[in-house]
Length: 113
Length: 113
Image (cartoon, rainbow over all chains, first blue to last red; front, top):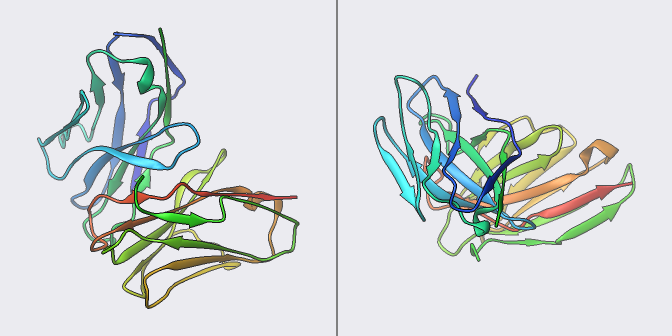
C-alpha cells in the first residue's frame, strides 16, 4: 500500500543553519504531496504542497520539489529560525482514494539560538 | 486559527466507557476527516465524510463510528474504550474531499484510565 517515510528526528540545529528533512514515498497512482507542520499544543497546518512531478512548493522560506524519479519530496530551508521549531510531517494523497492523507512519522526540529 | 473547531479539548474517561467527539468544519467545506495521533502509531487516517456520506475508510476499529450531519458537523463515537485508545484525535475539513489542502482543528486529547 501507499506509504511515506521521513528521516528520524529529533533534528537540532543552530539558528541560521541549513535544513533538510528527507521524505520518500510509495504510491500506486498520481499522488499530491504535502508538508504539514505542527507547533507545540496545536493542530497541523499546511506548510506547502505540490500536485505533480517537478512542481516546487514553497512557503515562508521552505521549499520542496516533487521528484517522481526518486519518489522524494525533501523539505529544505536555507536559514532556520528559533520559531521554526516544530514537528514536520510529510504526507501524500492519492488521486483515487478521496482526500485522505497518509503521513510519515514526523520529524521534530529544534532550533537553538 | 484554521476555522475548524473541535470539542471537547480534553477528555478523561475509564475503560469500557463511550465518548463522543465533535467537529465543526470550516464554513463552506463539505468534507470532514478524522485522524488519530498516538506515539506508537503516528498519525493515522480513520474516516472521511463528504456532504453527509461516507467517502473513505481507514483502519478504523469496529468500536469506533462516525457520522456527518446535515449542517455538516461531524461526530466520532468511541465505545468500549481501551487503554490503547488514548490519543489525540484530529478533525480536518476541505472543500471538495479530493487531493486538496485540509484544515485541521486543534484536536481532542483522550485519556483512558
